[in-house]
Length: 411
Image 1 (cartoon, rainbow, N blue to C red):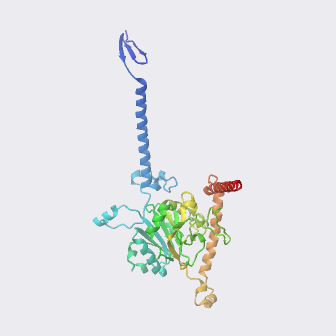
Image 2: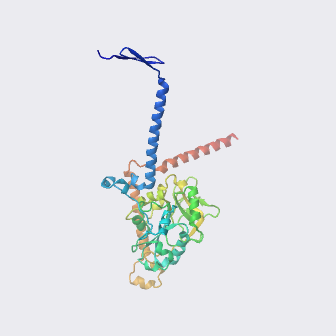
């Protein structure tokens, strides 16, 4: 005869009958189940949190590998174990063999920044003075030689520690697009992409970056001294009473800047001669640079879209650390009008290089504008982040004005 089993449960006791024998087991069901659920939830939480932290750590150590927009096609790398893949690089010089000194130097962890300048040997003296300001602040120096004369720089002591890249008659933006890919400059906190004709007597990069970091500026530039040769936008002019500024007020000229002005060139704007980008901002700005539009005209009006947020807050001009724009144009050669033998040049039908460059720049500006408009029209999922915020601010100001009028009438 087979064994018979029957269970009878009561609120306080659970009885089990096996072959006529009663076994009693007391279980406090509700508290027990509550404890078990709590333990399970804790385990799930710890596991999920650990996975999240690992993902964050991998993202910080290797941001371009984990990015959805990365140029790395993961499916093509399946033949390699993940741990061996290094999709990013840097511009740091490496010794041919290791010494104890080089190992200790490499082990020191500190912030790194990059200064990149398009240079010609005719501006060597000015570039030397400029670079000297950056050497003590742990900057990596990159010189883009547009005239091919690299040998003329070796007598400068710091030149042997700099990176030299040569391509005849190419612009700063041409070099930047090809040699400052985000994966190559990912270790640098800030990228200074400057012209060669800047006076830095009243500029210190350490103090400058301290202001930029404290104010949360993702894109910035030092203000221009009022004695600068080329000043195109009032927002770039130095204010003697401020440490930095994000907007300008100006009722003169065709462009009126007031509280109603929400974008360039009244706010959220820096010019192309001395921009400074955070790492995140440069990732965006590099993609904004058009590969075939080498003069970069028009791009300054759109850089605010790379500010990682509200351009009226995250783009600014630093007044306390300012520079002089000397307006010396050496790329491509001097203007025909400035040559001493102007009559002979005209007779020989020499090309006025400066006029041709300006004509090309203007042509590229129109192409850039057309591309932007076409891209906006074709991308149905893209929403202008500044139009909505601008509308909200205008509505808020209207409400405030109406409230002031009501209060005035009431009084």
